[in-house]
Length: 248
Image (cartoon, rainbow, N blue to C red; front, side, top):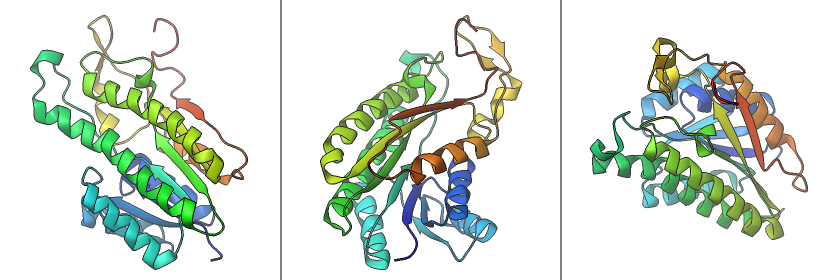
């Protein structure tokens, strides 16, 4: 096929939609997925209906993920890029008060979904000709510096870093390059509350700056543009004035 084929999870909104647009601009044909078909269809119509395909899928559901990648294989015959972007925040409450279902929701969306999609991508990328492809995981600076009351999100993002490194090792002999982008305060529906104040390590609420998601999208597009003998293992793109480096 003349175009490279990409799958972007959580591709209908926010950072995922910005990544989808950047990949289409770079010549990819993109399958976007998420739980809400209407939201996906809106993104397709907004960006480019000729280059984007919407498939509803809850990535925490193993069978649904298998069906998603079977659709990709049947329609396109190969997969060149997987962007594991889908994820959720958990309620900002004291650790001991977090309901079990909120923990399970975070693990399912942020970690299990990424693993399930990576499994399916590995199977396709190993078997296709030419062999190989690239996987880019959405990590977070929370993997190294957590916020208060963020145990589920932080734990899953730590796990994503481990999965990225392990998959990178396992994939390299099959020409599968795996990397991760750690994002700090990209503007989206998920980070909208930051302008009104976010709890800091000292317990105070302070507004935090955000950056346009297009900067994240451009970084992912760069990672995706590399030949498979080169890889960005980790990249951090963040709001320069956010309280991350040093003591605030």
